Length: 79
Image 1: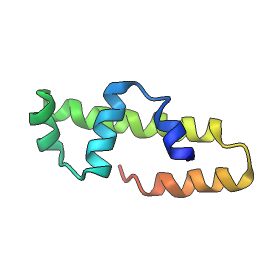
Image 2: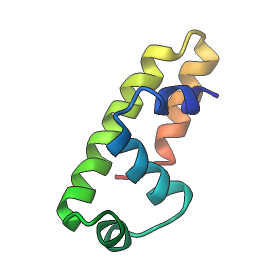
Image 3: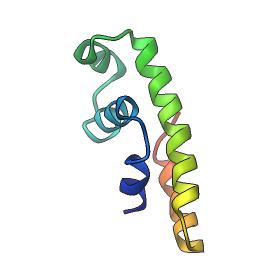
Image 4: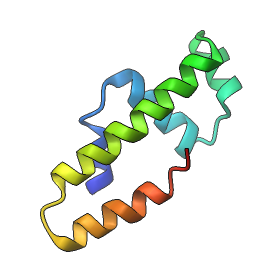
């Protein structure tokens, strides 16, 4: 739930690349073709999205358990 709430705080263009890359397991090149943007743009959106996602989860975490969950979740999103 924390991850879903945090994702809602991201700009749509970042949500799309994160969801497609991590949940649908599309590669950067596939995303670039699908979204008709350069691969470098996909990479920068992934990088920016991960950072904003981490910040949002920290902000939204209200208990020590949620804070720990946020740390654990961000480990699942390798740079």
